Image (cartoon, rainbow, N blue to C red):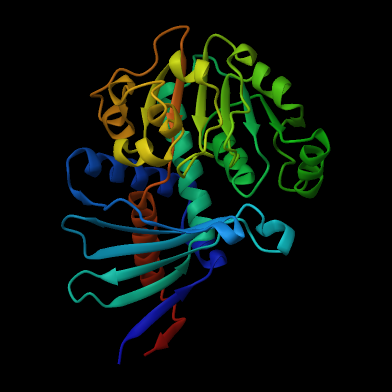
Length: 326
């Protein structure tokens, strides 16, 4: 008889803080830089009929007692059907036996770890005296980025934008109780981009919607939306004139913001400045004055592994007992 602990999103929220998450994710990237990580490239199942896909994301840190596999989808049309555009589950395994020990909701963890990593990259790459945060895209990732960036970084003003100003205003109205402590307004995409010191793009588009002529000369961009082949949010002029840091080189080349410019010959792989793990370790120079920087985030299983292992250990220490026996 085996026991499997079940954890809901509400359990996870009670078990982990933003600071906890930031610490374990920084440590996870440090282990990546030291080659103490097994993380095979994630395979995709593409559902062209339904405009969606499913990704399988395994990870194991050398010496750890646990390994994880995350199953996560991307279905941009899901909200019309009453479902989240991203649905994820994480299965934690006992590395000593290979038996599954915990099944936890991955939707909250996916949003949490993505926004936490954005905040970490921003810490290293943002311009001095950054005061304005701009976010393009008001889907599931928007609220976590607003909350976490304003918690872990210091911004005086936040702007959000989307396909229409009405959609952005509706987002603010729906979340007004959670945003009471944030100075935030809705703008057009062009206005949002032009005012931003730090810009976050969270859209699933396949044709660039952010133009270089809208940007300040000294701005940091966190490009989050392009997480599969064929997606690109930033125009090629931005790519060609930026210092680019990726979360993982191999994964970014085939599915990140740079995947289209690479595959069309706009840039070559040696144009990329390096990986976030090397930036955190001090092996790479971060921002120089008056330049554009990009963090190309594709989302890595190491982030999920770091947080889910911590959550599982905390649940055991606090005697969570929602087990099923099989």
